[in-house]
Length: 266
Image (cartoon, rainbow, N blue to C red; front, side, top):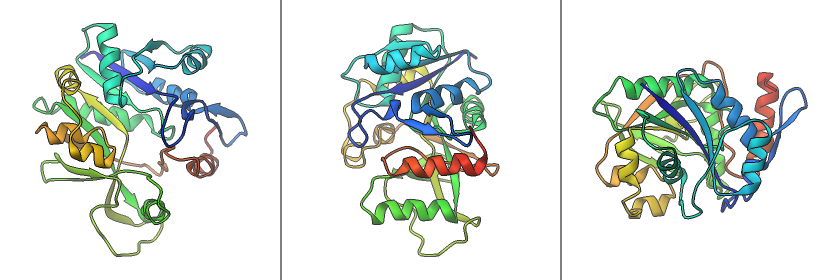
């Protein structure tokens, strides 16, 4: 099985313009750009044949090439990371059995999240798309709730059925639970990890569909698959005592830096 890993990155983010070039300081005091940290995370994943950065911005291209990344330029018309992955695959040609989308806003994504995702889709030949979900602990759930209470669009939550096929994804905290949980206590809420694995045919079909009402309301690209009746496998991953958070808003930067320090990661 041949696997292509794509890091889609755009400069003109609505919530955080220039986000891929934001500097993040680790435990050693060394600052690295978000795109560099995403590249380093991608390069640590086993079982991947090729890693590329897909962008439409020369500033990101120059920054990525400066640390040795392979870059594929994609159209400005790409509306989200999935469309950018599809454009990158078209530019590179066929020859891949699976395409992984490691979105460039999750520098804390450990390699085993992606490796487990690849293995999960590979083990389910009927599945066309897969994505990881992480059961939250009390501290992470409070972070999700705090974002919503402050009016910030933060992390995404996922609900899925007994067969682990996704039922829905939302920027709201679902399912509802009014309970308080200790920092390290497991909760019934699953944090959606912004990584996807696609069969090439599902990725090609995606670009031919218009965004549906749910995708437009939530601003979540994966809902286009659900609205078109394409099942998405949710692969539960384990934190192994690693903290996870995405860089969605400027307010997330100090939180991520604090996590890096706490975990001793450079």
